[in-house]
Amino acid sequence: MLEEARNLFKEFKKAVKDHHEFFADSIPLIASENVTSLAVRRFYLTDFGCRYAEGKVGKRFYQGCDYIDVVEDVAIKLTKLLFNAEHANVQPISGVTANIAAFFALAKPGDVAFSLSVPCGGHISHHRFSAAGIRGVKVINYPFDMEELNIDVEETKKLAMKEKPKVFVLGASLYLFPHPVKEIEEIAKEIDAKVMYDASHVLGLIAGKEFHDPVPHSDVVTASTHKTFPGPQRAIVLSKKELSKKVDTAVFPGVVSNHHLHSLAAYVVSCMEMIEFGRDYAKQTVKNAKALAESLHELGFKVIGESKGFTESHQVAVDVTEFGGGDKVAKKLERVNVILNKNLLPWDDLSKTENPSGIRIGVQEVTRIGMKEGEMREIAEVMWNAINEKKSEEKIREEVKDLKKEFTKVHYSFDESEVYRILENFLNGI
Ligand SMILES: *Cc1c(COP(=O)(O)O)cnc(C)c1O
Image 1 (cartoon, rainbow, N blue to C red):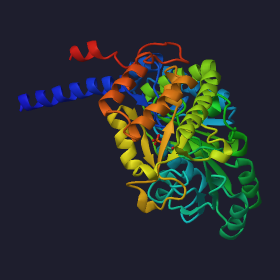
Image 2: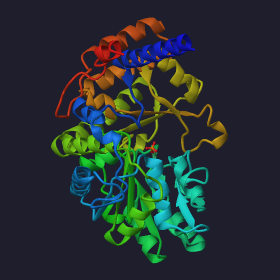
Image 3: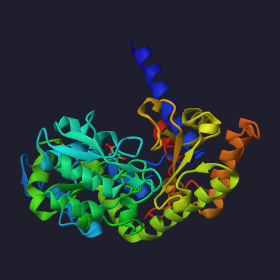
Image 4: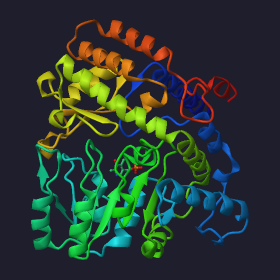
């Protein structure tokens, strides 16, 4: 038994080391990920992660929480400052958890919500398989304008008058252009419905003032804190003051008991990094996304949204049908250490989930490690060469490693350190 266990543990240690080396040598382009700074990571190791703090600041169910109260209070206050929010709850441990809480705060079983279909960018938690379904909410998809790549406001208004939804869900996972939050707010007011904006993907861009600000136009804003926002994996819920009680009870006791206090402490550090460096980071991220889209387009890729300038966020989406579809292309790129994901595009049927037409690219992480417009051009060329098999995979992989060599430190942070190869001593010690 012991020997088997020791072998498994060896396997584990090797995987941890290999994972870090693989990422050190790769171009990370998954739009929902980011790399935290060493300053943020240090706080994962604090004693906070060994404790419980159920309830609210100043009103806990266990003793020993005085200093945790200060940490959570600072987290709430920094969040309110960053987003100019009337109320903030920082306890949800992930975006889906935050969305379950939001649906509980805003809707009753049987109520109707308008959400974007998954091919149009909606997240699975906006649908019956996840958060919306858990609350018993009936979901109707928004009418979508394929030219504008956005919600069709006129058609939505007509449908809303007929279906009388209680919640309008905005925000998306494939998210190139800001949703019409002001127009939807007006429709919602007319029929006494609520606006729930899921900012998971774009929270860092909103914090850096590079995307529209949904907070004044939404009743509730939910968001993961680890996508464009470069924090630990958790989430926040912002809301209007009058909804604060509903939101807080939906979060606790609704969806969390312990709320991962080590990552709450790390989140505080990431908030401060965004207050200090967020504007420069967000600005460069959007510039990089536009530059990458332009380069891919010039090389001959079908980058979507051409007539609208391709993107206003951290994302770029490409229709790769002519190269065998998103599944084949994403796997091909993985073999040359370019990491991204296949993605349904708005005109795809759900039956294409396994091999959708598109790939989705996010540049927030390569921006954090210091890449600029010049590197975007190089990434586009690597992708073109790999997908068109212009060179051997081995050769391209070497080029990728070479390109990455200069970019292994996290920027826009308090501690601009190497983050990929910091585990060596630690792994040798166990
Ligand atoms: C990623 C995502 C979520 C889920 O967030 P997790 O933190 O992974 O639970 C929710 N909504 C949207 C729009 C997302 O993109």
